Structures are given as structure tokens and as C-alpha cells.
Amino acid sequence: MAKSLPIIDMQDNASAIEIVKSLEQWGCFRLVNHGVSQSLLSEIMEVGRSLMELPVEIKELNVHKDKSFGYIPVNVTSPMFECVGVYDATLSKDVDHFSSQFNLSPHQREVMVKYSEAIYDLAKKLGIKLMEVLLDDEFVNGLEMLDEQTGEFIPANPIPGSFLVNAGDIAKAWSNGRICNVKHRVQCNEPRVRYSIAYFVLGPRNGKVETPSQLVDSQRPPLYVPFHFEEYCALRTSTNTINGEVLDLFCKK
Image 1: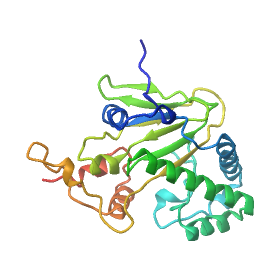
Image 2: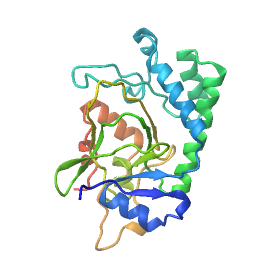
Image 3: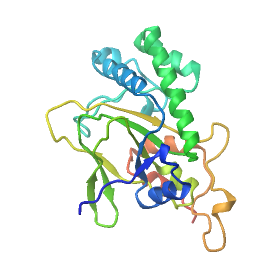
């Protein structure tokens, strides 16, 4: 039987053990019945779609000191990938700055704020401090996750109204390697545009990413030195690496 990603149902009283097991084995899972309304999901997807359909010269106004969070145009490395971004959607000043760059309507800005609040609350409810919550296109397939045991990519087929929760490098460091940072890719399987909206829980604003003492003992010594998220971002940008290699630079010798 073909493998598939685990599905966590928030209304089914999903236990912490189920969530941790999914993140340990896969580094990700599908989240259903999460409490975020379908109307809000539709509205934020429409806002995202309208932004991506803007002329390139407008999207180029979306700049940030960290190049990972501003406009990324189609390029030789990623000829079918393009995105815009706001650095911290939980901060009014960042949302205002992003809104001014695109001259968003009051309704579009309100949708962004409501969506950010809903996803932030959801992340806290899951009890996982560091993760990437992704609303993907429920009509266009293409996202695939790597099965480390077989080396094969498994389709992360969309489920309408669901999220793909994907733990990344920061979660792996915070959990002392217990949570895996799954490699993933998007395949072009059909001649259609695929939209997704990623929400990143980046790390503590004032402090370092550090493994809690409860996850460290004589059998499991700390794997990584504490680091600021900004250090990680700077290294990722300067080394132009996107597949988890940057985390190796923070390994304890």
C-alpha cells in the first residue's frame, strides 16, 4: 500500500503523542478540523492570488533586509516559483509596511490580520513552538515530501480546508534533533498555476533558539549551540543554502 502523510484531527482530541510521533517520523502532518473558518481560508487565498497577479514592477516593491522575506522573482534556479512576503504578520508595523508596498485595500489588510491571528492561535494550540503552517492549493497537486527510509518523495495530496504542518530547521534544533526537518519539493504535474500561503513561526524575538533542559540528558547531549534566528537567516542568505545545510553550522563540535 502506498504511503501517505499522517492526518491529525483537532476535533478528535489528537494527543501530543500522535503529533510528536508524526513530527519524529515525517517532520510534517496534515491538520484537519482545525477551527479556522473556510470563509477566512478562501478570503486569504483570494488576497494572495490578487497579489501574485500584480505586475512585476509592483511586486518588486516588496523588499526586506532579509531577502528570504521579500519578493522572490522567477529565476534560473526556480523557473516556476515566485513569491511575496511580510516578515512578521503579527506586528502592525510590518503589516502596515506590507500594505503600503502593495496599496492594499482596508478589506485586504483586515483579512491578512484575521488570518495571521487565527494561525498564530492555532500554532499555540498545537503546543509546538516552532513550526511552519502551510495553507496550500486544494485544487492543484504537486507538493511532495521525502521519505527518509526509502529515499522516495511521497505526494502530499491536498485535503480541502486542511493545513500542512511542516516542522523545519528551527524545530529540529529546538527539539535536539528529535523532530526532523523533512525535505520537500513541488512538482509541476499539470499546466495550472498553484498558489500557497506559508506562515512561519520563526523563533523567539528576544532570545536564542535553545534546546529545553527536559530534552537533554547523558544519553542525549545537546546537538546544537544556542543561536539567534537572525544568525540562521543571515547564514542561509549568505551561503544560498535552502535544504537544511545551514543547521549543520550550529552543530556542537
